[in-house]
Structures are given as C-alpha cells and as structure tokens.
Image 1 (cartoon, rainbow, N blue to C red):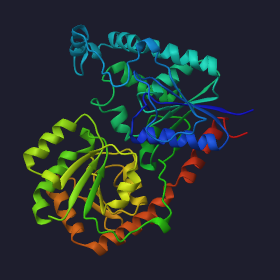
Image 2 (cartoon, one colour):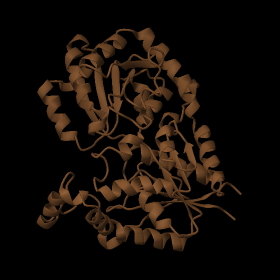
Image 3 (tube, rainbow, N blue to C red):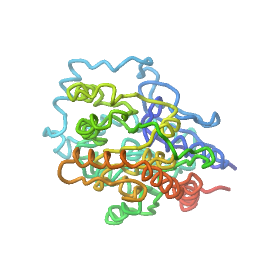
Length: 410
C-alpha cells in the first residue's frame, strides 16, 4: 500500500515565491520516495506551477470552474464589493465583535471548507500538509473528524504570522483560529530552532523544525573568481523586502562606482511605487528591474554580490540559494532569516539595522565592492556553510515528521 500525501497551498499557478518553491520541491522529493503525492489549491485562475513539478504529481484546483477567471483576466470588483471591503477593512469595528467576526469568517470560508472536506472524503489521503496561514487553518478544520492526519507548516517569523495585525486576515476570529488550529494539528513545522520558544509557549504538540531546501550546485561548475560588477537582489516587490532602502542606498554611492550595476528580480504590489522612486532618484540604467526569471541560478552565477534588504524573512531561501551559488551576501543584522544564515565578516556583511539603514547599507556595499579578494573569500565560505541545508537533510526531517504521525514510508 502506498501512502497518499496531499500538500495544500492557496495558490501555486505561476507563483514564484519561496513557499511555492518549497511545496514543489517537497512534492518532487516525496514522489521520488514512493509516496502518492498531490497538491490542492484554491485559486481563481488555472495555470502551471512556476517551478518544475514531476508529472506524476497532480495539481487539483478545488475552486469550482464557474468561479474561476480566464487566464489574464483580473477580478471584477463591483461597487457593492467595494463598499463591503471598505466596511470590513482592517481596523473597522465589525472585525472586533466576536460573534460578528465568526459570522463573517464562516461566510467567507464555508464553501472552501466544504470543497476541501469533499475532496478528503473522495481522495482519502493519509496526510494533508497545509502551507502558510492562508491554508493550514482551513485544512485542520476540514479534516476534523476524518481519518486523515492534518499538518500545519509555518514559513515565516511566527510573530508575523500569528500576532502582526497587518498580515493575513485582521478578523479576530481568524486570528484566534489561526493559533488554535496548531493545537488541533497532528504535527506542526517551523523553519528555525530560534522560533521554537514561540510555539512551545503555546503548547503546540509534535513540533518539528524543518528548514527550507537549498540545492547546492556542483562545485566543479562554480566559478568564484567573477568580474561582472553586478549586484543582484531577488524577491517579491513587497513591503517586507524593503527594496526602497536598497534604492536609496544605491543613490548615495552609484556615482562612485560607475562600472557597477544592480539587477532586481521579482515582481509584486510595490512595482509601480518602486519604479517611480527609481525615476525620482535618477538611477537610470545603473539599477534595472528585471522581472521574474526561471533561470535564477544562472543569474546568481553571473553576479558578484547578493543583497537582501529585507526587514524580516522566515528563512531567506533566496539568501541560501545565493550562498549556494558562491555569492557573498549583504543584509541587515536585525533581519530574522538573514542573520541566521549569514555570518558577519565570514560569509557576508550584516549591516546595522538601527539608525539610517540606507546609509549603513551603502557604506557596506561600497566596502565589499572595493575588495575583490574579500568577495571571493566570502563566496567560498558561504558555499561551504549552506550545505547543512541540503535537500537530503531537509527531506530526512520531513520523513521523521511523517513517521511521528504514523504516515512514514512503508
């Protein structure tokens, strides 16, 4: 008998985020290990996963066909929907009335829960692993009373996912159930040892620390002596990634380093705002927004420095990937997920997060841009240090978690 594992994530079609990459990598790894693997989503548009997925892994969009939109068509927001969104936006009183907040939550998610439960009854998976707060609270609720193990997989700084009112839903019932769902999970995963006290304080049962996968290229094919004069940044153009600080930092020093350039890969909600700031600062061709790429490893190997200006990271998957490709890293010392991977002065530079972040970053970028030997030395050290997060090491931890709930390899 083959174990059936279902991975649940809200969206995966054409999404290039870190969580989506982890889901695809895990699905491929479980499939290789002999599990029957599927991925369920809840999205308005169909499409292929951004990352290569084994053909044996089925992606099932539980959103009914009559509720989906054709590719490229954006959601139509009626005047009525606009009024409702204004009325129910974060901070307005209905979200803070316990009975009303539960009523709203039930209305928003009842249909999704029904479709999930119907799928679990039909497909009969042994385990369902929900990724992120946009998925695992509903997985746990839908699996209640069924013969299926429910696992909650957390992929960010826990305080951000469970206590930050500006992330996910601001509905007080959602916030409450988000935490409570962990207590009803058969297992919970988090990314780093430093996050365990948060979950232990909540008495979360069967907690497992499973870092993200970082695939390391063959060292024989890796060139550390590069001379491209390129700084690369990879990440969603969103507030937490703080690209504004990078743009301001570059404005301070770009004229002193005319041979250097910055390439930023990614897209997101701040795209237009960042393009406007780019124009205001007069950065011109010295800093280029390159959009998304499926060849990110090639882009890492073409660069000389990786910059991650984020305010916080759950793990910093792109940071690990950059190190695996021989790049020295510059980030901030107060950024979780960056300060766990980068050893200041050894594998990169951790700029001071206090004070003027842009000037601090500018000074450290200039220091590393001026020292070719240090760049190469840090790149080699980073390549060696990141091997502890290999795919094999991470998969072993996933197998251990499955064993703990009686769903390991047969």
